[in-house]
Each structure stands twice: as structure tokens, then as C-alpha cells.
Amino acid sequence: MLRTALAAALALALLVMPGLAQAQLELKPALGLTYTSLSKNPVSGTYSAQVGYQFGLTVLYGETLYVEGGLLYARKNLGFTETSSHAKFDTGVSGLRIPAMVGFHILGAPKDFFALRVFGGGAAFIVADVTAPGLTKSNFTSPTWGVFAGAGVDVAFLFVDLAYEWSLTDYSSLSTVDVGKSRSFYANAGVKIVF
Image 1 (cartoon, rainbow, N blue to C red):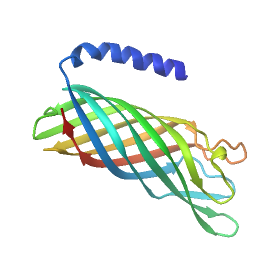
Image 2: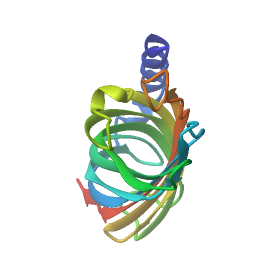
Image 3: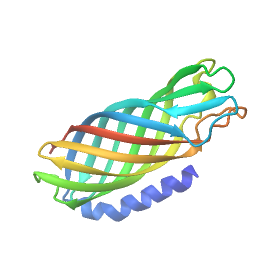
């Protein structure tokens, strides 16, 4: 699966490279919120989505059609309520999120005062730390792989990006705790540094 994804990414890069020859570069430091849910609940209780955060840097290269990739530190928070005792626990997974995407400016261009973009791509999430009663990072799948789609708005040197990601791999590596796959909403805001 990883080989197929890499081959597809390479083929896409080769297709868009000629159009990017005269392109420009943008650095996009950002911070934002995450909101993650799971596709299943274990027998012992229920999970509920809670707000987390992320921050980091992406690099955009292109004009109307562009490619963008980056590295962000993300925290995905969940609440857990036990079925028998109704006790509630906060759980969270932190790690590195590595998105790679292709986008298109529907309106405007990188140097314009206003621009509207759509984008889609894939991401890897590498677990670095876990705060959950009785669990360690070895109990979580790492890396997890996902696909996402979103839209962004640029106004002057500021931007806001919104994206929804569907995980392709299970959230937990424990066969006894099947919580399925994660689904995450990301909202980022930051500044554009255009070269």
C-alpha cells in the first residue's frame, strides 16, 4: 500500500512539475485546532471527541496549481466514559503530522490580496506521546495514514485552512480494544511568507 501511494505521488509530481517551473514559494507557519473522533467504541465504554491543537510549518510551491507539504506537532484529545462505572477520563495522543497535498487556486493567486483555494492529499501521523490510563504509545498504531480534503482562504499575508481527514489505518494496535479508525477536523491559521 505504501509503495502504491509513493508511486502515485511520484507520478503526480512528474505531471505538475512543468507547470511549477516558474512558480513561487510560500512558507506558512501556522497554529490551529484539531477535533478527532473514532469510528467505533470499545465494549468497555464510549469515546467522545474533544478539542486538541497543532502547530508547525508547511511549504507551498506553485501558482494556480500548487503542491504543499509540511511538518506539524499535533495533539488529538478524546474523552472516555466507562460503561459500568460511568467514570470519565481524558485521553490524548500527541505526535508529528506530516501532510502532503496538491491544491488549486479557485480565485486569486499567491501574491493577490484575496485568494480561495481547494486542496487534497495524504498524511502520516507518528505517535510521540500518549496520556491515557493504562495505555502507552506502543498500544497505538504508528504511523497512521490518512487522506484529507479541504479549503483555504488567503487575505493579504494571512491564511485560514480547514480540512477533514479520514484515517486509512486503525487507531489502536490492540486487538482487544477495537476503536476503528480516526476522523479528524483541522482548522489552521497563520501567516504567508511569499518569496
